[in-house]
Length: 227
Length: 227
Image 1: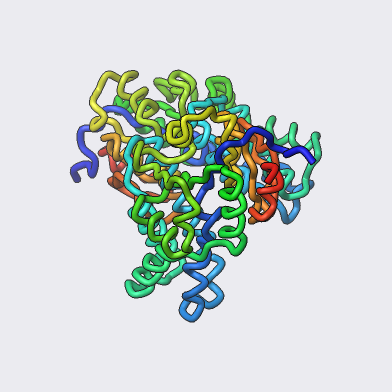
Image 2: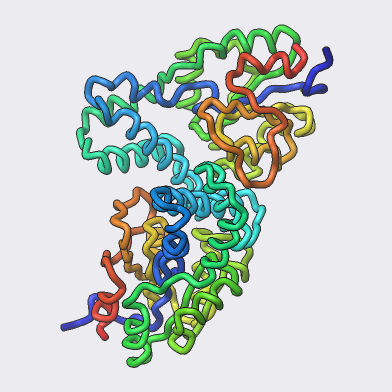
């Protein structure tokens, strides 16, 4: 069977929510969070993204460690969980998020046939190094690209361009995978081939671009690439 | 009593949520929306803002009429309300949103002492003209400034600069009012004096800037300005 996405030379992955389960930090604090676990995860994530967009648009970048902490402070305060010990614990856990279970084998299959692989993320180099090391997938990645190289967050086109520059191939030879619909649409508008790994049951966006495929787990990716 | 905010030459207002009640469109469709009214208002507004930020950051501007319709489509689909008649009705109603009740008298008090007044909004000139006309406040405004003049949305600094350019005064002589915390913080970071009209009980943001005052109704504004 021919590949659904032929001619792909590199697979580039969003990190948080796509390779790594951002909800796993709070899940390990279930003892303290109890029935506020889901609310904390939702609000923390929502504010984290909002703050990246708002700072980028104002030209007032702060790195993802600070923004993640700022968003956590907002969420904890809103939910009446103002405990410095809990904050420190959640931030620590954000450095060792679980990788989704299919990730190592999926990367191994891509590497086995010579497809290049990379992370392209809002995270800082330190945050991404920690997550990659914790997941034991460093040997399966050709590059870990952080927005810190350009000082602005997704979906600014400069960010997607980092992958084009790193591999020296056209955007159309790159398959970009994200669980975030807005990120998937933006990468498509930029010119990449896009596989939207819709883990969270999001609905299609009304934004420029259109993901080429929608899957629910990255285990489905190698087949699409023709591996 | 001295003014809390001395030296203000112009009062500049956000439109949607600040002068005009964006929830009033859906409220007039309560017959159809029933108990999904609040959910529609929340999701429509959330997506509308998200789409402005995401498009601005990508450099893919579309005007606020399109973005408002795109966000409405997303919200209606998500809530299982896919009715073309309802969509058309809600978009029409968005052109004649209620002004908050204190707005005309508040503007009159400012104008009476020579303070200049303006709207500074994401809305298109046509949308803003319709809202101003419907509210009967055209004579109380010296300017209606739309982001269409710069082709990018708030909180890009270019937008706040429109007010500085229009009045030819320093940002510090302008009091900017918004009900949107993120907008209030951004205008403060830009250098304006800012009164956050926190109608919706939002919590303080962890973003650059800091509103000078927080009020719950614009009726409190003239006293702050020393009127």
